[in-house]
Length: 106
Image (tube, rainbow, N blue to C red):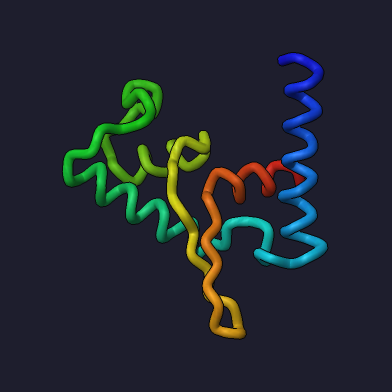
């Protein structure tokens, strides 16, 4: 990774943190246990219906869709969008990858 790429990545991360914490655009700045359960359940259903896993099943050591979905989430491979409803009635759409990236920095 070059210096300019690193600086660009840091600036992007600063923007995400600024939105999440200072402006409180999405709070909490992490996945809630309910969102985690919903994501794992939705992905496990996709896998059970025949979707291709994003991880090697042999690495997971099981063909259980829930365990595979948990591993995909842990590795940050899922491309979901979290929809949060705010108290004022507005809805917020947050990319799962952005939320996981922010969670790792805190």
